[in-house]
Image (cartoon, rainbow, N blue to C red; front, side, top):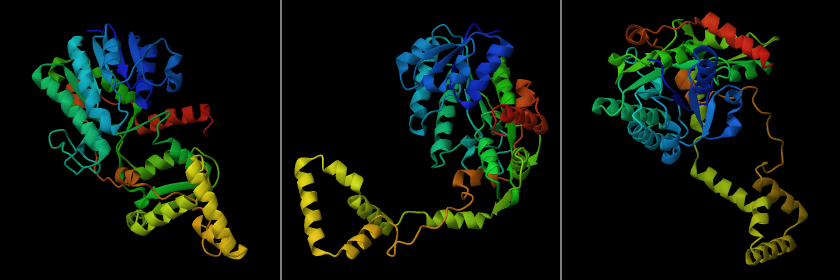
Length: 386
């Protein structure tokens, strides 16, 4: 049954914006986009969408947004700390408005920040508390949606996409930006498995979850069909940039040692506090308080009378973190060390099945990686990234 009107939350995000484009240009279904920050809505403002101001944290604005809608596509995720409360509020207003179907955008991350090989099919994948903000938040939100389905409160379906790429993807643009600087960055030779799915295929899965009654209360892994490594993925977009590039291959041991050295120590905290106390900007703020300003000026005058000019310069140099001899700081490294989140993604070695989504939703990815990369490359050229 064709929806009367769809509410799209998270409409200004990467997947949400593309879903709005497809609803307007391909499916031609009336919809309303919930917008928290209109400065981020430029991409969907050019469409025939009904834009409504609201916030997932404001239950009254949610209720107004849902009014008159019989389907909700929930793609919103702003803050890990508020996701569970916001999802509970959405369920409440949808139940009151008698929404007939909610398609909830979850994530493969519900299976943990570093999923075990059991996350190959939905039947063996577990959802727990992982002591990691994003994974725990997505798991909690999906759990609320599934509980609402079991109670008969809402007819909900959850989708768990893997690595979603395409135009505007934050998995793609950093690769191109590095390549423009003449850098290609790999982890462990790029041997990890890249479970990549094109954004349009994720949007197609959302549409496929609309009507079938036998999928209510179910969650589906949404992955592409092309099996590739992270080296394949990174090279496909780095190669769009002309010119010579230096390949930096970071070993897992090297990355682990780097981030271990960055853990704050007690000495680092003391040094930071001393530098703050010596900061001219900090002094300027404190000096706006008359008694404190008088005390700072008096202390500076006293110290100034008791030490030589040479000693004064040496102290200033040390407090500002330039070293005792005022030596120049070393040049910045040519490529940033991969952050722990990227390591988790790119060290993963298991292929994620999409068989259940194919069997139950009647969905299949329409884009091979070759086709998805070509279409993403067309956008990169149009946007003058390459």
